[in-house]
Image (tube, rainbow, N blue to C red):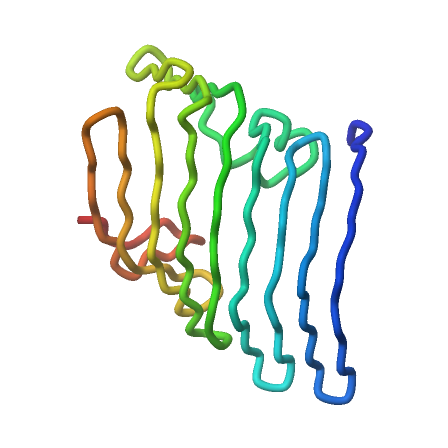
Length: 169
């Protein structure tokens, strides 16, 4: 069973059912795992996302596995994290060709991986991405990781998320 989750949801939206058009002018979710703001437009007839935006603050990552089972199963056994983080992301495009852009600030978090890596609280750590979702399971694009004064940049080439096959440079 899932633990209790308190949540407040508010939304201002316009729906045109005859053309399957949903315009989310502003959405807000306040919960015990974080606060989220959403906006954007979905055109159902063309399966298009326009100006899709989501931001999250007060994100308590260690609470997510309690509510979202796939997240629990995806976390490596030796990975540990605690504390708050925040993110911003945008999505734009049609089904089969969606652009995803975003940043995730994990600076306030404590992050460890076994005895090989340890990031103390309030040490800068940001992840940024500029990706294209080619189909449901394939990603490609650029990413960067900023840790303290160092920045690591890379490119993903046709990474299949189901199989893990792909190339990262």
